[in-house]
Image 1 (cartoon, helix red, strand yellow):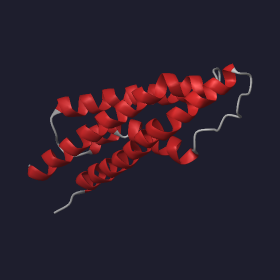
Image 2 (cartoon, rainbow, N blue to C red; image 1 turned 60 degrees about the horizontal axis):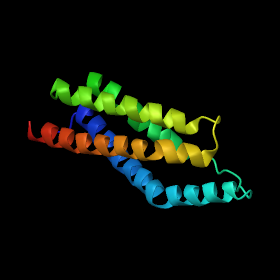
Image 3 (cartoon, rainbow, N blue to C red; image 1 turned 180 degrees about the vertical axis):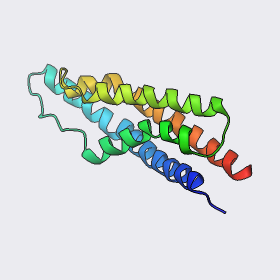
Image 4 (cartoon, rainbow, N blue to C red; image 1 turned 180 degrees about the horizontal axis):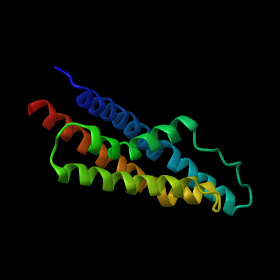
Length: 138
């Protein structure tokens, strides 16, 4: 029988996998585009910056803030798993906020913070899948 805490975990795990796809899509396609934009800026022909899509921002914040209510109201899992999940969430949240700062050109921000944010999301995905496996087997 599915409890509400298990449903919360499954919904969060699905969102994490979706954001992981977004993050690595950005690594494969947007990061090289930012490198091209950096080269264009060095030659004096900068392209206008494209803002981070609202869907990506909202889903990223949901993924990185999700471990807190999951630890409080989610299924009973080892505390170390919840602690790692919260640390990865804080790491990803800080990098997302740094990515959204407007003090630096966008291509500089993408070059500095994008890969770490994608890695934080990958850590979340591994933790989410292990949490789902543990919750379903216990």
